[in-house]
Amino acid sequence: MSKTIRLATIDQEGEFGCYVAEPEAAPKAAIIVIQEIFGVNAGIRRKCDKWAEAGYLALAPDLFWRLEPDVELDPDIPSEFDRALGLMNRLDQDAAIADIEATIRAIRGGKAGLAATAKVGCVGYCLGGRLAFMTACRTDIDASVGYYGVGIDGLIGDARAIAHPVLLHIPTADHFVDKDAQAAMHAGLEDHAKVTLHDYPGLDHGFATEFGKRRDEAGATLADRRTAEFFAANLA
Image 1 (cartoon, rainbow, N blue to C red):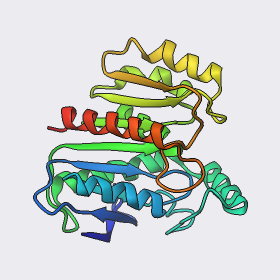
Image 2 (image 1 turned 45 degrees about the horizontal axis):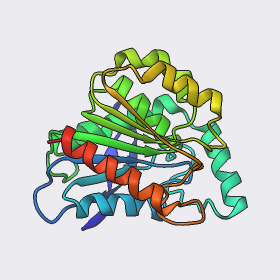
Image 3 (image 1 turned 60 degrees about the vertical axis):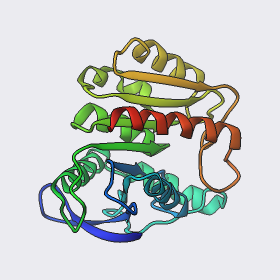
């Protein structure tokens, strides 16, 4: 079952929408799905639905709500892609992390009609991949996964704060994350006891999207299997 709820911000001064997909039985854990620059669109909702089908409580908070609530954009439409880039450039990422923290607290506290769930992970894509890494550095989330996160090479110094497992999926032909950035991620993170990196030779940014031209079926299937195994091991 799916629905949209409202969650209070950390400071209790605002509310944001959050798509929720619930499993048929009691959830074995919760997973926060962190949006791309295209908002909580059909692809992100489908990610949530698939996690619910696997037995998890899945939530996708609307992180663009301060700029424009309920954004749903299609990356295959050039004008919508350009609009998404503009939203990304205007996003206050610290505020976005605070909203993810509010979502974590709501899940653990059973707020807004949610089933109280102790173990919480997150998985993010593109912008969400970066925010998933930041969430691992700044919160007590139990496990974090980032797909083709942009700008993680500039956050390597924050990795010392990571206390729980992190998995990063890195397509080697990512036109938003160049070879130097990829090398910096490997140099700075591959010896970290809590971080696992997987490269995907020849694949580009967005290869694991649910819909559209960017998807690579074999790559997405492999990465999603690794993610499922990672959450099974770290959210038990």
